[in-house]
Length: 598
Image (cartoon, rainbow, N blue to C red; front, side):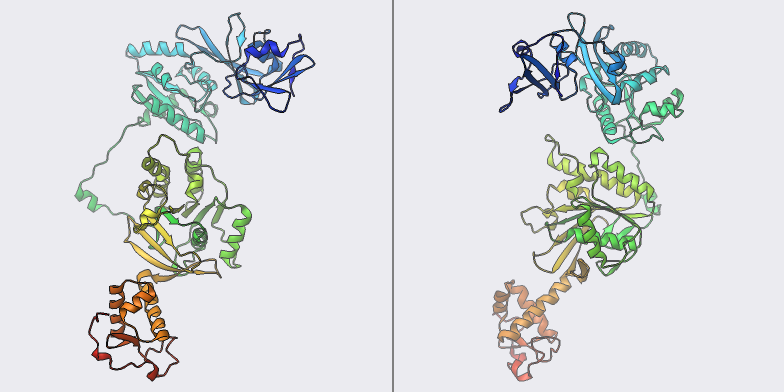
């Protein structure tokens, strides 16, 4: 509802010159402008003229009283009154103690900013006001004491409430205005030469904010530490920790034990000592295919990657067989089907299970936070609750990776995007199976088929690439990794289980298929030379010639004057099995040269 001023009649012409970005909304009698009562970048103030007077509505929640006061039309009401629900007022002072601005804490964790006006009142915006740290005069005093040789920590929580709680314990503390994500590099100068301890709130934004603060202070402060307080509930802060019994001395001890931000402890081991260490065997989710660590699974869209991954998840969760052939050790599995809704996921699971009961050790989710806003923490929480976990499937990378930074190098951005997943996988001894798409351009090196830069494949411990001609049942799974030899596995799509079954080594399987194609061709059209066969099957001539000679040595073909035909004794061939010997005999096979020219 719009709020109309009841004190006196105020016209549109009176306030229009005082409003920024004042524009008329086409097709209506309304106007929009930037609200003067808060730091408004986009117009959020609706202005309506009715019966000769003006009504205002701020979509950010500013009252009409404050808006009219900010316009200089009349003074705002006493904001400390009960009706305005102000819980506390945080004064931001300059170095000598003059008020620069105030942050009003209201109910429901709402905040309102104001600055002193020239007439002795308040303007409810911070336009033109220098931003400083909370409790700046106290920091000036701390700087003086530090210069006199006194050593102590300056604690940096996320909000003013936390700072005041630490002050009550006699600790030095400060924070930036406006909470998480609003730290400015210019604030760091006020903490130059001091030992700083950043105290993050226990949530994704809080941890990201702490990292930003620590990064900004690194190299400016004498030291920087980031201390994650123990036993905090989700979204908990240092005030909560203190209410649970935390003390000043305990906080100081925690800070002393925490390594300095940016410090690196290098472990150097001699070759002899390294060789004497007995490491546990590498753990596998699927032996020979999915080792512990981060595995990138790449393939073109709609070729069966998700079905294959779900089938592997079911096999591991039930202790069955992956690809219908590889026995796997049972363990807990988390499948993040982030491109599916619950209905589609249910349908696919029923298809993969083929009427079997769903394994109790398979957990599923269709929504998950991005890795930089709590996604990593959520995965780690699941791992802590499932100590026998063996596999986590993320379908797909695009749905969980952090939003790309416009100024980030492409390789660095790709590498950094998935490195936290790899670190987590190795720390807990599980396989994190990350599904990703191929790029459009083809390549002779299957590693180059992954969409993005080599940063993705370089950060992965293993890479699987699924190649399958669209509409065909057979596929090849190319596998390469740090801890096993490269391999190519032949697969065949099985509609009964809505998944792939393993056929064996791809080279051997393809060689068998090539032989059958040659037998079928010769059994259909009659004797041909290797060059003619290569042209008919669209294959390389020299490889075809060598294969046909090998088939002749194996008794599958015979040769007469450089032309090959099917050996009538090859009863396993469905093309020639029913034919008589005379139909397949073209003469003395021994008269042909070893590698005929044709």
